[in-house]
Length: 355
Ligand code: ADP
Ligand code: MG
Image (cartoon, rainbow, N blue to C red):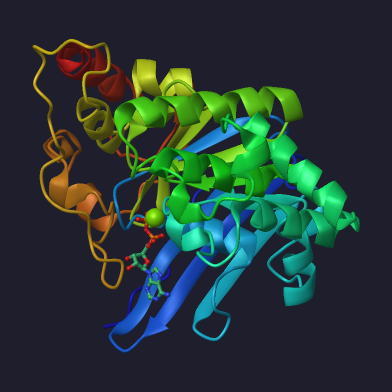
């Protein structure tokens, strides 16, 4: 089957004017079953010191987007198109060597699984010290001091002795803190955190979120925070990009999306936040249906098979026509409903269901 070229979303921000500028990014994988279009025309900007939340269900292309920014994709099986400018430097065409140099200095990352990210064979301190020595040329002693300083910063008790522990001697929350220490040791300007709290219990999760926010205030790092749970980033992200099937379907400030989401998928995410205002009487409403395969995504609006509002759009537009990202009631959304319909549905049907 031939998949026709679809128009890509509009990109309202001026090209390359911000700290991180992603323009019309497309990432696809050649697989035995066909081409997987994991990211399909994504554009966004991130300013210095701000936090962008990228939210969407599993398989929507969040991790692929960020691995591509970091240059951690496999170039043999991955096709990348579009532009990624980090502080004016083009990353899509950058060499492996340039990217490796940027990783761990200008940009770094924190993942969900600290056990996989940390080596079991080296002490936590050494794993924090090593990238510091490599980047700054510091001595072993200086780097050890820096590791202790970083462990203190991320709230590890008795950092003077803990620095010599191995990862398995740390609790899950402490390992996550250690990974954050490692990621921040060279004062990166961009930190990508991919579901960093998903494996943690709620209390520890809240502590880690607070920690990231505090460290950001201290260092001015820009953060991309990836999660499948809008509730997790509600308090820490300045801006939010909602992803569905490899595309951005809604983008605005966190407040705009929380207070007046303009997309049926955004409404679904809002309704599935566990107890946003601790109102236990409101039932949790998971989004019905499952996310589509990116091997063969639905035509038109990829969300149409799950959308309860497509009858309100005339004809079969949702099935045949890809909605563009357009301004509606103050921020960007990609849905064929009119701005008036979006406003009315949100106010009359969605808002009353939220906690
Ligand atoms: P998520 O939003 O959960 O982070 P991902 O970005 O990991 O989603 O994945 C997006 C899509 O790309 C998924 O359908 C996934 O199966 C597919 N994908 C990711 N990496 C590869 C790869 N190396 N080869 C083929 N398909 C991939
Ligand atoms: Mg992921």
